[in-house]
Image (cartoon, rainbow, N blue to C red):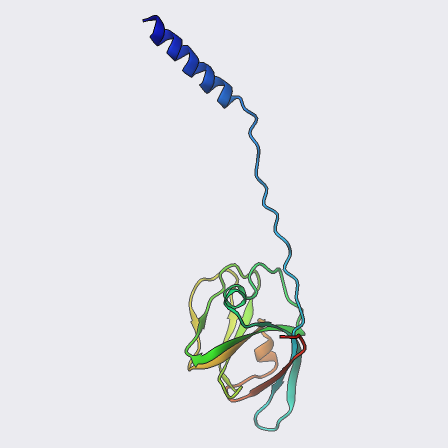
Length: 165
């Protein structure tokens, strides 16, 4: 009987001392994601070859960059965009998971012509936003800009890379 009481006393003491330990909080610090200019892009009206807009672009062309895109960013200036470059031309679909501001998603075919536009994609919405046809490139800009520029299917894009890739 004495052994049982000794065991109970030891277990109780361990429980008491463990429950009195100072609890520490874990803080996860995240670094603000900054824009890195990797190129310049022109949006061109197909009917008259006029330049509708010029943007500094960040380029997403590997698996990690295309998966994260503009996630975890607070905003983007109107003269900037992100261009996704894929190796092949396929139907594509984007969503707004972990994206904190509204975007226009411009789907571009392999001839660098606009195939379709998903306007005003809402922050954090995980609804699939598909292209209307096969595309090889996708341009993300602030919501409302494609309407402001009067972009239409068939308008073109041209870009140059300024990074060393």
